[in-house]
Amino acid sequence: MTLRTCGIVGSVLFALVMSLPVALAGLFDDPPAPATKQAPGHVSTQPSATGPESEYRNAIRKARVTYCQALVAADEKLLGQLDVARKAATKSGDDNEAQRLDRRSEAAAARLREDQAALASAQANERPRIVSASFGTGTNWADVTEQVKRLAESSDAVRANPDTLGADPSPGWRKQLEIVYIQDGRRRTVMINEDSEIRVQGLIPAESESR
Image 1 (spheres, one colour):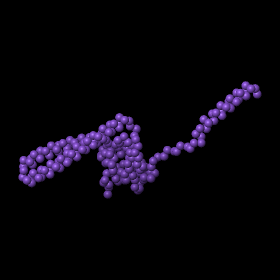
Image 2 (cartoon, one colour):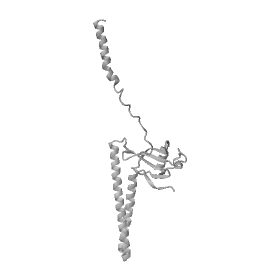
Image 3 (cartoon, helix red, strand yellow):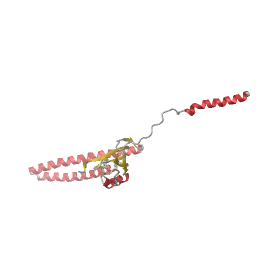
Image 4 (cartoon, helix red, strand yellow):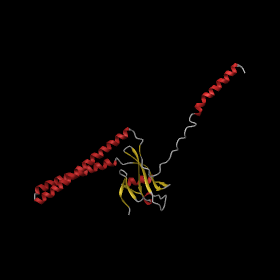
Protein backbone atom coordinates (compact mmCIF):
# COMPACT_ATOMS: atom_id res chain seq x y z
CA MET A 1 0.00 0.00 0.00
CA THR A 2 1.44 3.30 -1.03
CA LEU A 3 1.67 6.32 1.23
CA ARG A 4 -1.01 8.04 -0.83
CA THR A 5 -3.40 5.08 -0.38
CA CYS A 6 -2.68 4.99 3.35
CA GLY A 7 -3.48 8.68 3.57
CA ILE A 8 -6.85 8.28 1.82
CA VAL A 9 -7.84 5.32 4.02
CA GLY A 10 -6.80 7.25 7.13
CA SER A 11 -8.88 10.25 6.08
CA VAL A 12 -11.92 8.07 5.53
CA LEU A 13 -11.51 6.35 8.90
CA PHE A 14 -11.05 9.73 10.63
CA ALA A 15 -14.28 11.04 9.06
CA LEU A 16 -16.18 7.94 10.16
CA VAL A 17 -14.94 8.21 13.72
CA MET A 18 -15.83 11.91 13.92
CA SER A 19 -19.35 11.24 12.66
CA LEU A 20 -20.10 8.60 15.30
CA PRO A 21 -21.08 11.03 18.09
CA VAL A 22 -23.54 12.69 15.75
CA ALA A 23 -25.03 9.42 14.58
CA LEU A 24 -25.34 8.13 18.14
CA ALA A 25 -26.66 11.39 19.59
CA GLY A 26 -29.91 10.72 21.45
CA LEU A 27 -29.61 6.97 21.01
CA PHE A 28 -29.38 6.36 24.75
CA ASP A 29 -31.69 9.20 25.81
CA ASP A 30 -34.91 8.32 27.61
CA PRO A 31 -37.77 7.92 25.12
CA PRO A 32 -40.35 10.70 25.21
CA ALA A 33 -43.34 10.02 27.38
CA PRO A 34 -46.36 8.96 25.35
CA ALA A 35 -49.16 11.50 25.11
CA THR A 36 -51.95 10.52 27.48
CA LYS A 37 -55.56 11.51 27.12
CA GLN A 38 -56.92 13.08 30.24
CA ALA A 39 -59.76 11.13 31.71
CA PRO A 40 -63.18 12.75 31.36
CA GLY A 41 -63.94 14.78 34.43
CA HIS A 42 -60.49 16.27 34.70
CA VAL A 43 -60.99 19.96 35.39
CA SER A 44 -58.45 22.08 33.59
CA THR A 45 -57.89 25.68 32.64
CA GLN A 46 -55.53 26.34 29.76
CA PRO A 47 -54.80 29.41 27.67
CA SER A 48 -56.63 29.30 24.38
CA ALA A 49 -55.14 30.20 21.05
CA THR A 50 -56.29 33.80 21.20
CA GLY A 51 -54.23 36.86 20.52
CA PRO A 52 -53.97 40.24 22.26
CA GLU A 53 -56.89 41.61 20.26
CA SER A 54 -59.22 38.88 21.51
CA GLU A 55 -58.03 39.38 25.08
CA TYR A 56 -58.68 43.11 24.74
CA ARG A 57 -62.23 42.47 23.51
CA ASN A 58 -62.86 40.07 26.39
CA ALA A 59 -61.64 42.68 28.89
CA ILE A 60 -63.97 45.29 27.39
CA ARG A 61 -66.93 42.91 27.55
CA LYS A 62 -66.20 42.01 31.18
CA ALA A 63 -65.95 45.69 32.11
CA ARG A 64 -69.26 46.38 30.38
CA VAL A 65 -70.97 43.53 32.24
CA THR A 66 -69.63 44.77 35.58
CA TYR A 67 -70.79 48.32 34.82
CA CYS A 68 -74.30 47.18 33.83
CA GLN A 69 -74.56 45.00 36.92
CA ALA A 70 -73.73 48.02 39.08
CA LEU A 71 -76.42 50.09 37.34
CA VAL A 72 -79.05 47.38 37.84
CA ALA A 73 -78.13 47.03 41.52
CA ALA A 74 -78.40 50.81 42.00
CA ASP A 75 -81.80 50.91 40.25
CA GLU A 76 -83.15 48.09 42.39
CA LYS A 77 -81.88 49.74 45.58
CA LEU A 78 -83.52 53.06 44.60
CA LEU A 79 -86.83 51.35 43.85
CA GLY A 80 -86.73 49.70 47.26
CA GLN A 81 -86.11 53.03 48.97
CA LEU A 82 -88.90 54.71 47.02
CA ASP A 83 -91.29 51.92 47.93
CA VAL A 84 -90.54 52.38 51.64
CA ALA A 85 -91.00 56.15 51.34
CA ARG A 86 -94.26 55.66 49.39
CA LYS A 87 -95.70 53.45 52.12
CA ALA A 88 -94.70 56.00 54.77
CA ALA A 89 -96.36 58.84 52.80
CA THR A 90 -99.54 56.80 52.37
CA LYS A 91 -99.61 55.97 56.07
CA SER A 92 -99.28 59.66 57.01
CA GLY A 93 -101.96 60.69 54.50
CA ASP A 94 -99.63 62.87 52.41
CA ASP A 95 -101.18 62.34 48.96
CA ASN A 96 -98.97 64.89 47.21
CA GLU A 97 -95.81 63.18 48.44
CA ALA A 98 -97.20 59.78 47.49
CA GLN A 99 -97.94 60.97 43.94
CA ARG A 100 -94.46 62.47 43.64
CA LEU A 101 -92.91 59.20 44.78
CA ASP A 102 -95.07 57.30 42.30
CA ARG A 103 -93.66 59.37 39.44
CA ARG A 104 -90.12 58.80 40.64
CA SER A 105 -90.79 55.07 40.95
CA GLU A 106 -92.12 54.91 37.39
CA ALA A 107 -89.03 56.67 36.07
CA ALA A 108 -86.74 54.41 38.13
CA ALA A 109 -88.58 51.28 36.92
CA ALA A 110 -88.18 52.38 33.28
CA ARG A 111 -84.48 52.97 33.84
CA LEU A 112 -84.16 49.56 35.49
CA ARG A 113 -85.69 47.88 32.44
CA GLU A 114 -83.24 49.67 30.17
CA ASP A 115 -80.26 48.72 32.33
CA GLN A 116 -81.45 45.09 32.55
CA ALA A 117 -81.68 44.96 28.75
CA ALA A 118 -78.17 46.40 28.47
CA LEU A 119 -76.89 43.81 30.96
CA ALA A 120 -78.54 40.97 29.05
CA SER A 121 -76.93 42.21 25.83
CA ALA A 122 -73.49 42.43 27.46
CA GLN A 123 -73.82 38.95 28.97
CA ALA A 124 -74.97 37.50 25.64
CA ASN A 125 -71.66 38.62 24.14
CA GLU A 126 -69.84 36.68 26.85
CA ARG A 127 -71.47 33.35 26.09
CA PRO A 128 -68.79 30.64 26.15
CA ARG A 129 -67.65 28.90 22.97
CA ILE A 130 -68.23 25.16 23.37
CA VAL A 131 -65.30 23.10 22.08
CA SER A 132 -66.50 19.58 22.85
CA ALA A 133 -68.96 17.66 25.01
CA SER A 134 -68.94 14.02 26.14
CA PHE A 135 -71.56 11.97 27.98
CA GLY A 136 -70.82 8.67 29.69
CA THR A 137 -68.91 6.92 32.42
CA GLY A 138 -65.79 4.80 32.83
CA THR A 139 -64.46 3.99 29.36
CA ASN A 140 -67.80 4.38 27.58
CA TRP A 141 -68.32 7.93 26.36
CA ALA A 142 -70.40 9.38 23.53
CA ASP A 143 -69.56 12.57 21.66
CA VAL A 144 -72.53 14.91 22.19
CA THR A 145 -70.87 18.14 21.09
CA GLU A 146 -73.40 18.98 18.39
CA GLN A 147 -76.36 18.12 20.62
CA VAL A 148 -75.09 20.40 23.41
CA LYS A 149 -74.39 23.25 20.98
CA ARG A 150 -77.89 22.93 19.54
CA LEU A 151 -79.49 22.86 23.00
CA ALA A 152 -77.38 25.82 24.09
CA GLU A 153 -78.77 27.88 21.21
CA SER A 154 -82.41 27.08 21.98
CA SER A 155 -82.47 27.30 25.79
CA ASP A 156 -80.57 28.70 28.75
CA ALA A 157 -80.06 25.34 30.49
CA VAL A 158 -78.99 21.90 29.27
CA ARG A 159 -80.08 18.75 31.13
CA ALA A 160 -77.66 15.82 31.22
CA ASN A 161 -79.74 12.76 30.39
CA PRO A 162 -79.95 10.28 27.50
CA ASP A 163 -83.29 11.62 26.21
CA THR A 164 -82.06 15.22 25.99
CA LEU A 165 -78.61 14.39 24.60
CA GLY A 166 -79.77 11.60 22.28
CA ALA A 167 -77.12 9.13 23.49
CA ASP A 168 -76.77 6.45 26.17
CA PRO A 169 -73.30 4.84 26.02
CA SER A 170 -73.82 2.96 29.32
CA PRO A 171 -77.47 1.97 29.82
CA GLY A 172 -78.36 1.44 33.45
CA TRP A 173 -75.24 3.20 34.75
CA ARG A 174 -75.00 6.67 36.29
CA LYS A 175 -73.29 8.92 33.76
CA GLN A 176 -71.78 12.41 33.59
CA LEU A 177 -71.71 15.22 31.07
CA GLU A 178 -68.33 16.85 30.45
CA ILE A 179 -68.12 20.11 28.50
CA VAL A 180 -64.89 21.73 27.29
CA TYR A 181 -65.29 25.40 26.42
CA ILE A 182 -63.42 28.67 25.95
CA GLN A 183 -64.38 31.84 27.79
CA ASP A 184 -62.45 34.95 28.75
CA GLY A 185 -59.57 33.72 26.63
CA ARG A 186 -59.09 30.50 28.58
CA ARG A 187 -59.88 26.86 27.92
CA ARG A 188 -61.95 25.31 30.71
CA THR A 189 -63.67 22.04 31.57
CA VAL A 190 -66.84 21.51 33.60
CA MET A 191 -68.66 18.30 34.50
CA ILE A 192 -72.14 17.60 35.90
CA ASN A 193 -73.90 14.40 36.93
CA GLU A 194 -76.68 12.75 35.00
CA ASP A 195 -80.12 14.39 35.46
CA SER A 196 -78.52 17.66 36.54
CA GLU A 197 -78.73 20.90 34.58
CA ILE A 198 -76.08 23.36 33.52
CA ARG A 199 -76.71 26.97 32.60
CA VAL A 200 -75.09 27.78 29.29
CA GLN A 201 -74.55 31.42 30.27
CA GLY A 202 -71.22 31.09 32.08
CA LEU A 203 -71.60 27.28 32.15
CA ILE A 204 -72.65 27.28 35.79
CA PRO A 205 -74.34 24.12 37.12
CA ALA A 206 -77.98 24.84 37.93
CA GLU A 207 -79.10 24.30 41.51
CA SER A 208 -82.17 22.29 40.54
CA GLU A 209 -81.91 18.56 39.79
CA SER A 210 -84.59 16.17 38.71
CA ARG A 211 -86.33 14.35 41.54
